Image 1 (cartoon, rainbow, N blue to C red):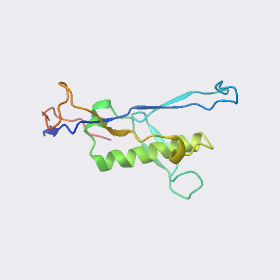
Image 2: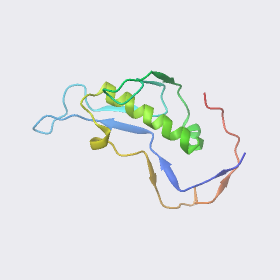
Image 3: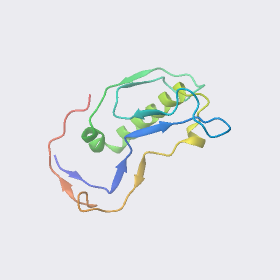
Length: 122
């Protein structure tokens, strides 16, 4: 199976840091989270009903090759988990999407084709 490079990167880690009024991180922070780690989506954004779903750990390569719809689903679940663990965090005010345009490079030119066989995503 071939992969066409689209010139976009996907963030792997997100750091949550709550600070007190003098700018010092509060106890237990900062916390780092990786979207490639195993995690459980509590089911919905904080304060909304939903059913929890477990996500398995995946490699960086699997994340890079994940279809955009599957990536968006995993990213939404990742945000839900982070918000649930860090109230009153609100992604609409505090988080930046992890799928952002980048420029071309010699290692991943836009429109370039990769041909490695992907590992299955569990």
